[in-house]
Length: 316
Image 1 (cartoon, rainbow, N blue to C red):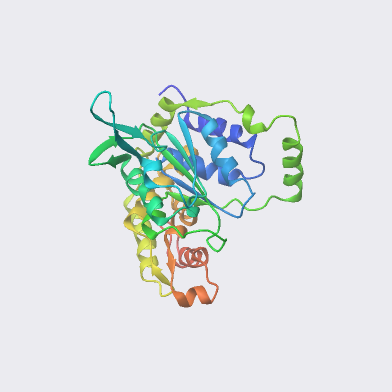
Image 2 (cartoon, rainbow, N blue to C red):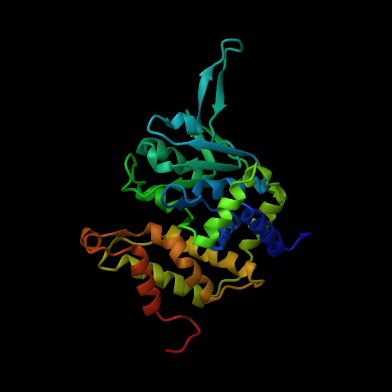
């Protein structure tokens, strides 16, 4: 490898910051997901920059990019593709859908039907799409950046648990401060949108090399036990109907490995796990009806568990 991954991630972050103001944590989380070959769910109210963040990240990578605006009339074949008869050759030909790309922006994913949402399940888990019994591999790297409005907004369909579990992490952007919003107004009052001026920082080769580095970061038995204990605690919590899956526990370890790389380490610390737990696990947790009525949130429960469980290497 002829480059320092930390410098490259920093360059990507600075590039996205030309468009996204004051949301460094959200940008870094998206880059961590990229390193871990993960998919990102960007969830928040309309107008805070969800689509802009996804578009800025895609423009920063010299990779192929497709965008699909999900609406109730979008069909699964629009996503995956379809086969059709070619009258000239007499053969059935595969016409690829929007998913046959390296970076896919799935805008407002919860505005389409559950049937269309489920068309992404195989794609996100296995990096392939099967149409009429024939499997087609997706290019590498592959990443889904999906945006979602809160489910209580009009015209939205809640994502099923199986779909939520395939998102590596969830990002909440939030409203900007007054100073940040003044900066946004200044940038976007210029003749040309800053998004259109972004240039790629790195290509697919560098991304793949960084992704392969993540698995080389050492994870001790104590840290593995800590992650497994957190996952088990969510499954037995009385306010949770559904706890973290083994897929979620694996994602938490991977995210902690990426954190270690960005910190210049080749080993995971418990603090890496604690830092990533909320973004990686909270969207996978399902509250009981009683907990929802009380106004409890998965983030609150997860933080309580992290505060109560013993941390490896710390004396009680």
